[in-house]
Amino acid sequence: MSIEYKILTEFIKDISFETPDIETYLFVKDNLSKYSLNIDINSTAVKNKVIQINTILRFQDKNLANKRSNFEITYATIVKLEGEIENKKELERIILSKIPKIIYPKLETIFLSLIKNSGFPEIKLKEKVDIEKLYNEKLN
Image 1 (tube, one colour):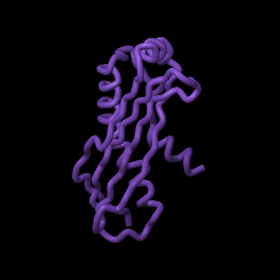
Image 2: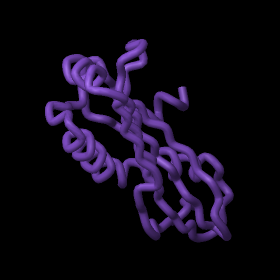
Image 3: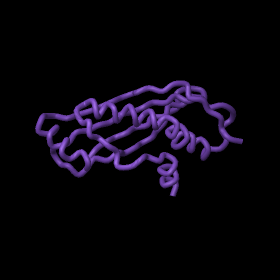
Image 4: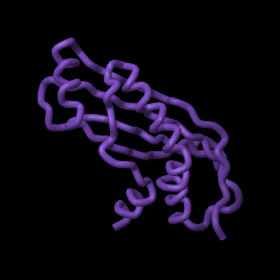
């Protein structure tokens, strides 16, 4: 028996864009192609069968030592689980794959729009994010 769930709400929980000075801005603008997107997902129980799933996107270049901008967003999704939860693997799949796959297109649009509107209109992701693929790779 599969676990049924319903998304109750979703919202931007936290957002951080940091570019300390004009020299950093100009350097980052010239090196934006070296930045890559990293995704992290975690969850916490809110109350009786209600969980908060946080999807965190970080757009960064880990190789640049001094001059870099940091772009990060935490997007919260509140989910109500229905029925008995007997299969922990099914619950894990919902938290780490099914819900993120549903909300990701909207989250990506929001995140890229914010970066573009904060002075980096030329931003492009190197490849399309496949949440299901990332989840399966994490299992192996």
